[in-house]
Amino acid sequence: MAKPKYKINEKHISDKHGIARLERDGFSRQDIMHSMYNLTPGVDQRERTKIVKELFDRKGEC
Image (cartoon, rainbow, N blue to C red; front, side, top):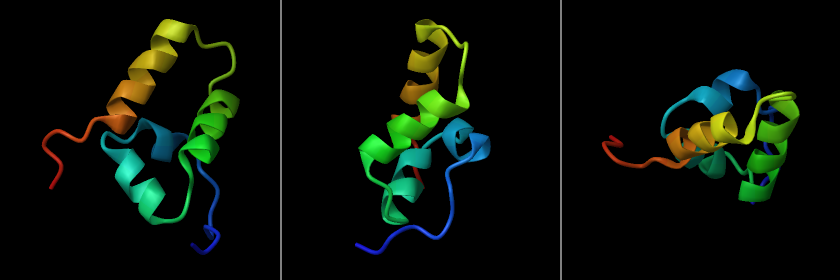
C-alpha cells in the first residue's frame, strides 16, 4: 500500500470511527498507536484506553 501523504494529528485520533479512515489511507495500526502515544503525553492510561475505544469503535459506522 502507498505511504500516507499526511501525518496523524490530534483530530484524527479523537474522531470516532477514525481507524477505518486511517487504515484506508495507508497507516498501520502500529503507526496509529505510536502517534496516539506521541500526541497524548502525560495522559493517564484510563484516558488513553477511552481514546482507543472510540477510535476503534465501528458501531454505527456509515
